[in-house]
Amino acid sequence: MATRVLVMALLAVSAYASPSELRPHSVTPPEGCPIPTWQVNEFQWYNGSHSLDCIHNQVDINTKGCLCGHGWCEPDPATCNGTMVNVCWTGMPNYEPWGYGPLETLDIDFADGLNCHDEYIGYRIHDIGNGASNCGYADRGAGRIVAFYGSSNLESSTGHIDYTLGDGHALKCDNGSSITYSGSTDFQLSCTHDAYFNATCTAPVFEIPVLNYKWVV
Ligand SMILES: *[C@@H]1O[C@H](CO)[C@@H](O)[C@H](O)[C@H]1NC(C)=O
Ligand SMILES: *[C@@H]1O[C@H](CO)[C@@H](O)[C@H](O)[C@H]1NC(C)=O
Ligand SMILES: *[C@@H]1O[C@H](CO)[C@@H](O)[C@H](O)[C@H]1NC(C)=O
Ligand SMILES: *[C@@H]1O[C@H](CO)[C@@H](O)[C@H](O)[C@H]1NC(C)=O
Image: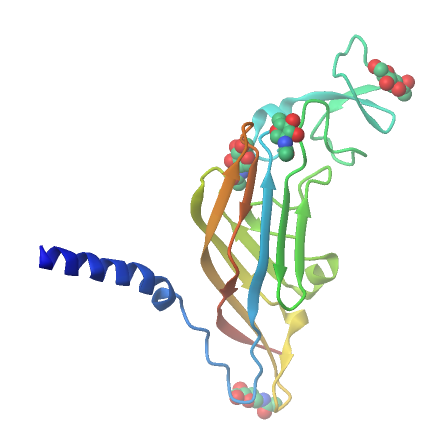
């Protein structure tokens, strides 16, 4: 009995201790070089059960809608007073075609002010949950990539983020050399689903450890 209580106590301790122990510590930067801190303050992902998905959903890819003026009308070829077009056709003025629910959106906001925001804009620049997110057009040229991987289908799961600072955001060391960094982490992803299986996912505040550096010449 006493042994069992002890074992359970040890299990409880290790269950709490392991996440921080296993969390990799940041790399030590070369002497005289600054190192960034990447803390995610806010993580919000909305993935509706009827958000248009032109990458993974073959039904959506095959669906045609009635584009009438600047909006969508009932997709019946007999009554469509505009043009019947594929709903995944790029360059549409309105991205919630007839029968589709709210847009899928992703927001990753960092303590240092960086905001990454994605939403469906007529064609998928980014495949939300499967890689690079949009942290702004300026960042694209500067080489910064914040890539998110995860699923909105489970109540509780492990998400993953890879952060590449990019040569365009290189930091200056005391001796004048330029350095850039990358890092990654797993994190706890929690999703709630309403009666229609619309998913809203969040994460507690977490840090992405800086794991590697690279000289920029
Ligand atoms: C097309 O018909 C719909 C009703 O089905 C109407 O709401 C819409 O204004 C019409 N659009 C044009 C461009 O005539
Ligand atoms: C949930 O999904 C339904 C069905 O697609 C949609 O009508 C509704 O607007 C969605 N609700 C929210 C809060 O996103
Ligand atoms: C987004 O939601 C749809 C509909 O529920 C689901 O099929 C899809 O797997 C979700 N996407 C991700 C990346 O979890
Ligand atoms: C600056 O220091 C780093 C090592 O800390 C070295 O690799 C780099 O070459 C130095 N740059 C200059 C310009 O001396």
